[in-house]
Length: 64
Image (cartoon, rainbow, N blue to C red):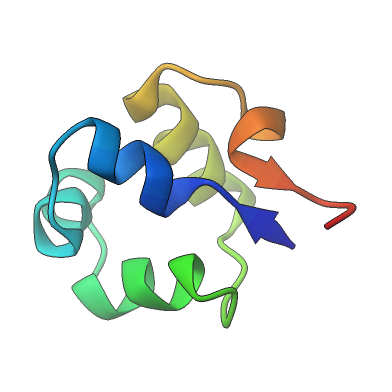
C-alpha cells in the first residue's frame, strides 16, 4: 500500500520523531510506514489523516 506520509510530514516541517510523538508511536513505526514495510492500524491511519487534515484515502492508496 503506497502512502503520502513522508510528503505530508515534509509539508508540515516535521521529523519522523516529531510526528511519532504527536501520534503516540515510535519513530521506527513512522519510518516503517513511510518505507511501506508496515501498514498502520485503522486507528493510526485515521489519527494520521486527522493530524494532516486530509482523508485516509488520500494519505493511503490501497490499490498501490
